[in-house]
Image (cartoon, rainbow, N blue to C red; front, side):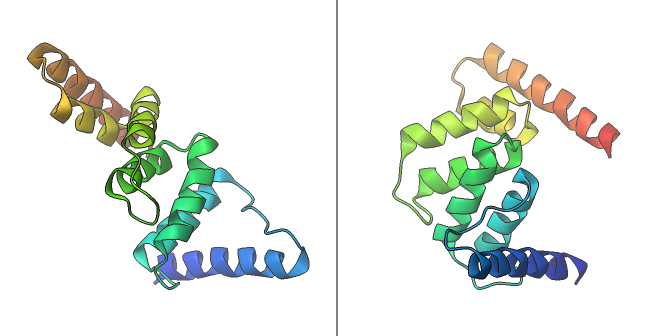
Length: 136
């Protein structure tokens, strides 16, 4: 319930800003754009809208949010809310991996043909997960 209220608040904040200014405003932070993108992708407090999800996740990804990069990569690969773009999907997946996003490292390991490199990527993913757990 708390998450839905938070998502709804983000949507209402963005909508209020849109009414106040002729140009559509951006969320205050990249993290807010990420959460707004997730809300639109999942229909959490708003109607599902994959195109808006791509827009807000793209905004967050461009500003360095690794989770947004990862999700955007999958949406681009599947053509969810946008045209399929395998090259852009790979760039975002690589960017998320460079940011040590564990799920991106795991995805790259699953695609890797060289067993030694795949094992190295999985070790990096495990290390990144330990940092994530420690940071919480």
